[in-house]
Image (cartoon, rainbow, N blue to C red; front, side, top):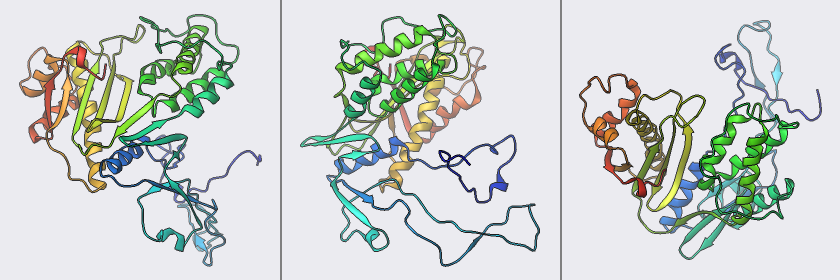
Length: 372
């Protein structure tokens, strides 16, 4: 086996089904939105944030007992071959201030003090809240692509730019484009202003052309002047949820699919956002806005359950702001008629949650729409 590869032992891999998940590798990774929500909740409760590091990646050595694994339908039923599981890897963790650090009883723990760096994100504490930014990574990326001395610009994407697939000369080294977009996607964890552009550029990863690379380099010039930008979480005690969702109609020039976006606020702190293309083609603006509403309602339910896990009761009457009166009326009116009977049934998930009282819909002007 090549030295640069890693072997992974899958316990009970026989439960994976060919054609469903047989080729998938399961490796649990924390969601950045979970981390941001936890940080917001802690600072609003005026709790200190601390950071610990496990000194040794391999927490335990040889086991004093053998662990036996018997794959279904493989080998001789009466013969068991021992397999020793040697290590568990812990990357990092955020915990509140606990007297004595009970983990130190089992592992060698290094106290790093107040939280200031986590998963490539710098954490800056101020008297009014916390700022998350990735300035160091941005400067490293600019140097990697020889853009650290370029002239900065103030807009991440030029007006009315709509890229098309297979237009222009193919890049001689497409792996550079893929690497650049992957790293730009990492910056969207703290830079919601990059989300739409990165989503647009990520559609051309397979066969990127010169126009796509030009837009990507344009985005680097924008980062050159905004490298210290980030996301700020204020320490006010407000824990109410507010959601904004919006969608265009058939903006993709090739597939004619629409792009929707949403942002979720906990108090006045932005904890989750997304810009994504719909998987189906919409026949009207009301339909695509209604579809976007159903997506964000599902995301809101996940946030409510996350807050419940953090010890906070589920909020009721979560305000959802939308700039489409047609979509709002369709959610409030359960009557099917010829103008809406083609809507996908899963979109009416919004009506169910509206009837349960989980959400309340409110109209906002396009000028005040934060998700656009």
